[in-house]
Length: 127
Ligand SMILES: [Zn+2]
Image 1: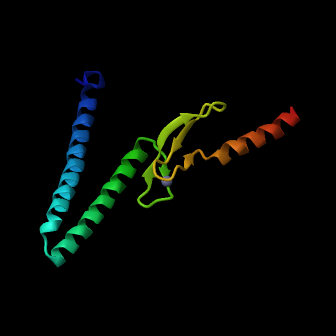
Image 2: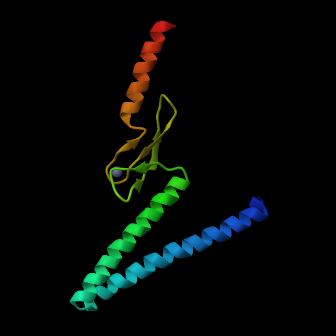
Image 3: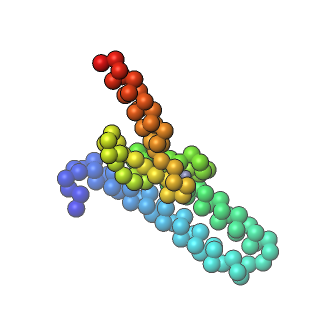
């Protein structure tokens, strides 16, 4: 299937599938715990809720780390940081613009292009 990646590519895909199993295991464990909560007594329910929150946030950190490794910018308005997704290409400077799906922050921010525009105006006076 992935023959054009060669033997080392095969090893990479092997590890990626192990990582995916890890993610799926966390997710199904959290879901199972969530379904169990209505049947738990006070202390057990509290402990289960805390564990759900903890593991959800751990999964978010893993998402953020994966996103960073793939070169996605992270929105630092949140902790754990949220990966920003490619939204569009700047029409003038042909640069990818990423947007936070939660707060709408952009990377690069509009101020960046305003600065580029100002610097370009100054440069144009001298040439
Ligand atoms: Zn954000």
